[in-house]
Amino acid sequence: MVTAVETATWAPGTLLAALGGADREALLRLGPSRAFGAGESLICEGAPGRAAYLLLRGCTKVLGSGAGGRAVLLSIRVAGDLVGELAALDGKPRSASVVAATPTVARVIAHAALLAFLEDRPGATRAVHAAVVAELRRATRHRLDAHAGPATARLALIIGHLADAYGTVRGDGTHIEVPLSQPELASLAGMSEPTVHRALAELRVREIVRTGYRQLVVSDPEALRDVAGRRGA
Image (tube, rainbow, N blue to C red):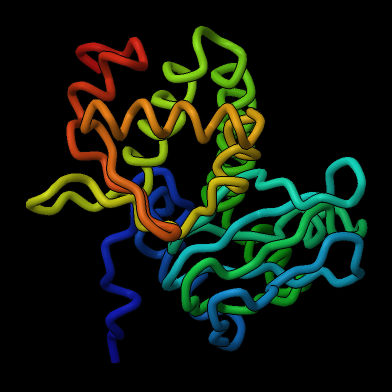
């Protein structure tokens, strides 16, 4: 029986979008399915454990410990992504925490099952390696963007990346479907919270974005690209 998950359309840039049909179907059959409520941890930084989590629905935040133990938002992972793969592959303690940002469903894949899958499927191995490299490139890009130009332009660039990756276009603008607080947005952008607050205020006054409690909507994508210096992107 073919399930809705197996026939779903996965977001570009995710592992499931990159895999060939046979590899995708095989991966989707590995491990039991588990549901996580918003705010529930899939993975805890520093903990043992080698299972990987294949996200089927929802989105998660990858968090690391900064100075003084402050949580720093490192990246966002969505349905179609594989998380926890580094510990599954190298056996070391978890390098970051993964927390459900919205109600999330994932397949919990034991490391032995993942390794066997990759040994049998070289195309899938290349796709997993490419996904790891892409995540490192995104993290590097965010850090570079956070130090290029005026604060408002830098924040506009980060919001543009979020809208491209996680946005849903509706009648009133592009809704970024990840609930982010201003401190989380600041840590993702590599900026201080007061700086993000001022830059967001400027974008709101110019009616480029709208914000609410953990809500971010791009009202004018073209103006956002202009502010970010991405005209024509």
